Image (cartoon, rainbow, N blue to C red; front, side, top):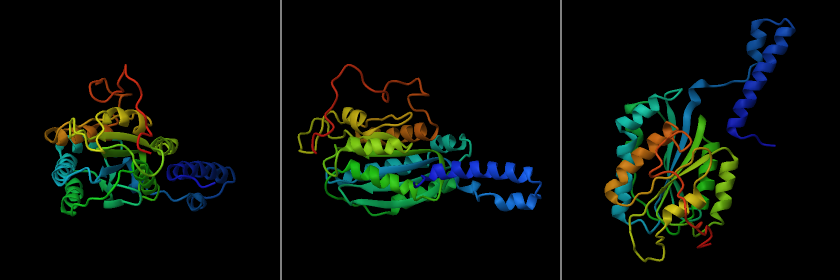
Length: 278
């Protein structure tokens, strides 16, 4: 059985404790105790491992992509986000920026980087801003989730929490059932939060879904403290991203927050079909 990264960390700690107790009973010197310990790098520990998974499918026009990029660049360098990072147990987070579309269309724009203050945040943001815009076909939330999990497991950091921040403007239409992908992510102890982009209002394109916020609520987000922040206009995009990042970094999801206005599950409606385009 292959242990997940966070499970390996816990296993290493347990082995350390066992070895120390066993060798102490045997009366061996401190050098022997040190030799028996499993290596652990405290510099790799962060408060949260955060994947920013951003939709670049064809339904996102160039202007919307620019607004989206600018929103993330502004938010990650904001004083509110920096303050939230510094308030954590380790005072640092690990972030990666991934763009996605259909199956096999996942691109790591900025690989894993530790952020612990304004300088490292500015470096991360500059890499996002400098990357050329891309556009791909289809919308595979399922594939984006699977890719994000693998990227977390193969990353160099160990987070006290692990979160996938899923941003998109349409439902899953490729790559299998989105609910199956979601459930596999949750089973690995990873939380999925949502940023449904409802920028086209009452449009009637084939990709349009008027109740995308309900779809994200029923079919995409999940895990401890999961939440979503719908975006209804380009003007509020930056503030929505900033609010969402602060909540994710400070662990202020519904279980810890009294604000039920925009992020708690809706009541009094019928569930959305999660396989509408599958």
